[in-house]
Image (cartoon, rainbow, N blue to C red; front, side, top):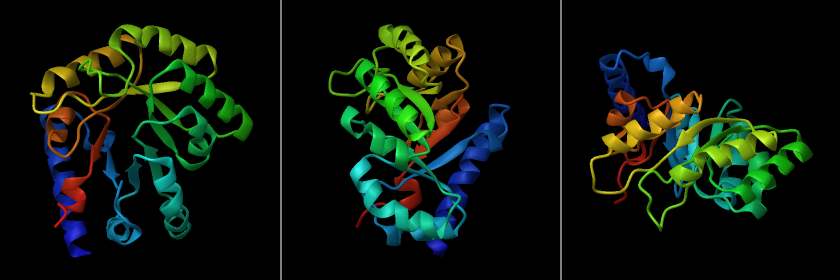
Length: 220
């Protein structure tokens, strides 16, 4: 419990200091604790320490552990940060408050249909393949305008962009590009930055940072 509270306080301090250096308000940055692969016993101490935003990669995993956790803490916000199959769209809409991985036409259509059916409208981000990596999900930069137009036509309100820079390279240019793309398209939110680089992401405009190891610790 104390360890979780201390890690949470440390991460919040780093975010606050980075925000101030960038002349931003710390309150404008949402910290998402990436709880994928962690069980309920590992998550509860962070909830007890005051953390309310959590990120999961898989619909099935989230469905198995979060209904009970949310029953005990009603004000938790759950973010889907992993790839989403179109056939899981309705289940994802029912479970998550934000979906960061909208990246293709078929998924836009499936999510729009699920929103109409369920009446739920989570926050949506388009994931951009900012490094043009074949193995990584996300919409190509060149395809972003068309995907945003299709989402608007389908009634799907996109509020921001999400990206994961290539591994083992300086992330700052990629964060700057995502910030510029979001600005160009009039989108207020930028989901970027993880445990190794969230401080840089905050300096370059992140509104949502996705932090796992720095909050949950390394696995023994």
